[in-house]
Image (cartoon, rainbow, N blue to C red):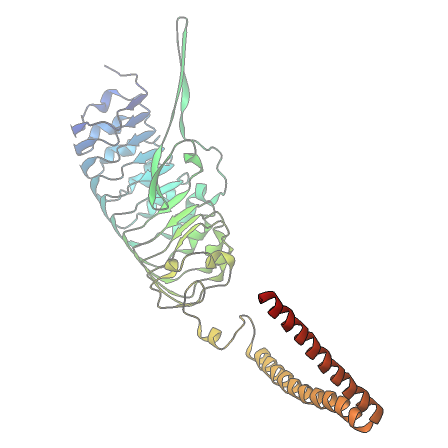
Length: 401
């Protein structure tokens, strides 16, 4: 018997056991949400008969085994959220070939291994790709710039929802809609995105075993608001093209093996609120810019050859140069000017003393009338001070008596 359900949501309950293998009769189902339970065992093959399914959410369960290849028949899928399970095996190539309507793909915190298949680059509509906390190795594919939705700074729709349905029976109309929601790790904690899910563009490949350099093609994803490549074995310099990611709010490249200097273009990311470059092999001076100097020194920690603000250790050229941005020639001229000004000060002081002293004393010695008047003035001043002091002392004694 065919079932006409469109939405089946049993999320956040205390359900356990294996998933039933009876999905053959649910071909009209669009939303299946069994997340945040304690389901175990494998994902049944019969889920491949959910031809109209748009959202499969099984996160936070105990599911094991490989992804059944029958899921490639679910070509209408937009959200596939399987994070925080115990699924294993290689990431299937058919995901990129058959599920090209995917907007959200989260395989976070499972046991997937092997390399990232280049077929994932066919996911032109993808906006959230989270493969973090697995055992994925190899290099990041260079074709990630085929993620067309990530190459656009603006999104056409802030929500991802099931299209409204209207059931008409005699004298009764029923209208409903279903908003997809996904829990995403954002700035160290998980947040639920529902009404704004369509605006989020995230690439998270952290906590794997990826190696090699960051492909420059990733820098074409100018719509990204979060890029997390931390805790891998990535090497080489940070490409100067990273300044193209103007929409970035979150950038974590920590705990890799990046080398050379920090590109100055990084200071152009004015919207960056979270940055972590710690535990790498970066060297040289941190580029001057309000943005990069505003972060805590821990952002640059354990890059032993890195120097400049906000780190306490100064760069070698800063130790001999009091003002940044001035060359040695300018400093030499300034030192000479300082020496000249010091010498001039002492010469003026000596000349001023002689002119002032002899200008007064010499006049008194040579002009008798002026000398007599000057001495008379001093004598009168002395007598006035004496009389004033004597009167005041007498008044004070009288007051005490």
